[in-house]
Length: 490
Image 1: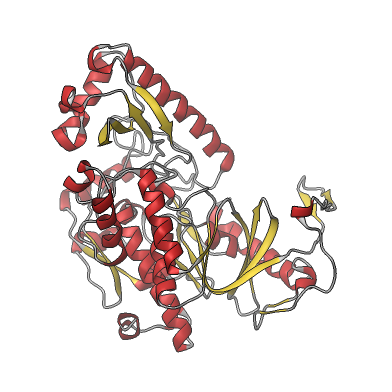
Image 2: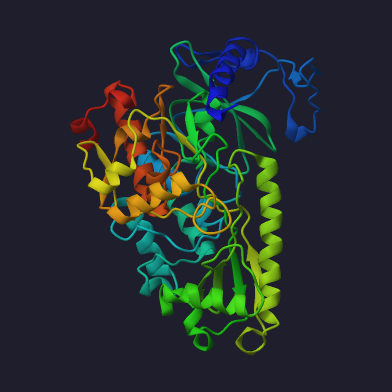
């Protein structure tokens, strides 16, 4: 079954459940989003009270959980799911515009792939204004000499955590980390009105007037019942994932030909030649070594192929494989002696880097034709300068057996890309009202996605979604009803 075809039945179940007893006596009036206080006493996790739920295994092998009361954790004007680059842009823009903002994040820090993913490089952020420029300037002001030389684009992930926390706390938003989205609730008008989460606090419901999906993989939109596309074919084959690592024990002056910011693009081919000549076979054919500061380097040397971004079991297996590969490669480099004799892994990323997950169907779509033509839009929210960057979908050269898509990519690469706009409509869900997206889960095709997915574009997309959400509230409209002049006036 194609993943997008599951969305309708999921949404119907959630809507039915919500209008029944799922929220229990916390009485969420879906039409008006009014919330009544609970009438009785409910289990308190902090006091160690036990919550027991019933249920049974049905004839189809699925466990059917009995209805239970879910505590209502709070109401906000704008709720942002995911605090990666897009979520930071969305939350800051909405909070600074005066909205009451709630952020829900799975990891134990803000920043997503920038921090928990140890990315260390911001692509296509340098020409951006607004919040993206603020973050870059903070990295320059407080970062290393490398950060200063690269205008903040090469950064220290630990410093990034602190900078983002300071910005968000100052803006006055509420942040809940260590919290996983597990459900969404729509009302009879097909408007998103609540999300369900799980955490140390148990299951909780959160209501809001506007929602922004910045999860990267379109998790909220999928839970709400939106249609989406994945990968290049019915098997949902996507660009591979990569696990980043931090290294120490190296002297940049002894290995300049392998350091990306010293030797440029040639550093990648030099690095892979060194590895292969030494009998090391990295799964990624363009390994990248970057100097951050104080003898700390980042390394990307891994590709995990054929892993769906919505399958936790397969992502777990990929993460374990990737971490094992990274440690083995570093151990083999250490055996080379010389400048490599003391190289060691300081840390591997908490989360594996996902290049491609769901692409949620929006009111508009970014296509490869837009990029070739350098298309402009009256309701532009982000100007993209980055070109095509399609990583091999399968091991081997290009697409290894996927001749049709390989020819398509080669064709458009030959035509070349031009700077282009992302329209507001690509950030607005087509199937559910009151929901926007920002980051790599916006509406676009496979090849276009390889261009706009980078994090320097995610921040301004989030910023635009945050502003548009607040503007729609002030004007008494839904985001898809905003005109280009109304958007520019925010």
